[in-house]
Image (cartoon, rainbow, N blue to C red):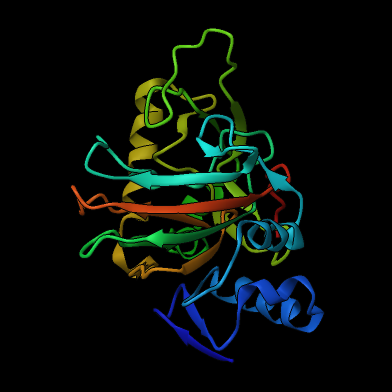
Length: 270
């Protein structure tokens, strides 16, 4: 096995293994898990992974999460379709976000395999939310650590629906969350789902969220991954955000994502 970091702050490519082997190889699973905690997002090239194996890898990390609105492979809602082509008006994840943070218990892990990639473009960016939090002054950190924010999925975007019977997921989470494994503090607001800082006026909330969202965009907290056919990305939604670039129209970009259920975000003072 060879591990090559993408940047000093986030991301690494793991060579020489098949991710499917973690299902039956405990030593390999523990190694991958440790690398995941260290680099926050791991990438794997040239992966042979059937839909059944993809599900099994996800289940190795925990209980599978079902997206409340996304299209999925017929017969298995845990296999979420990621697809954009010449008929699309936008792509999945084209703003900075943490997956489905509007859930009461947002996903902890996402495992995405692309089987079709554009000839140019289609990269994905990831940002380290530990590093973003650490970049703020002690005064700002203290202020943020006492706040909560409303996360809301309106269904007015990529997964839009006018079904009045469908409940719209929403939840209030701490603005800074403590990672349950590493116990590090991470910023936990994102442009895709965070709507309002609890207890602030709308103008105050917009001003603060604007500052936080802009910090996430800074390249010094990021890595950028160029997809190839049969590449896999495994990322930690508890301490990262990602942004899938929509720069390949009218080319096709398509794959399957399996998502792992997380716990309710919490803040614990260190």
